[in-house]
Length: 126
Image 1: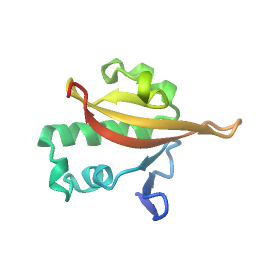
Image 2: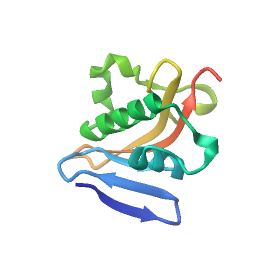
Image 3: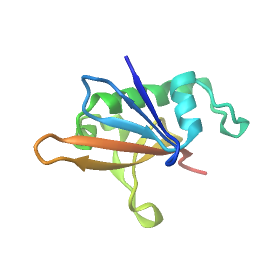
């Protein structure tokens, strides 16, 4: 179901469904571990089980969409382009406290393929 590709140089991991158009890359190992294993090996990145379940659900939703504009259909995600020192990032909410920060890029003119590079699962109010 999944095809895994590890790029050692960039430390990113690509997971891609054959029928989906959006590609997801994880910039940090703990983000990939949370998604595929349900926990991170580094104790610094411990999250409550309900946060991890919601994180997995949001990543699955991101994979199922064809472009970032499709996020606007899901009001509960509160999709937004960030401003200030994070102006090149976008975010969606996992819950009221946590959000997923990512960068996206569109490749190709005919076919919209968006690559989302998941950067961080951050505590929004910390």
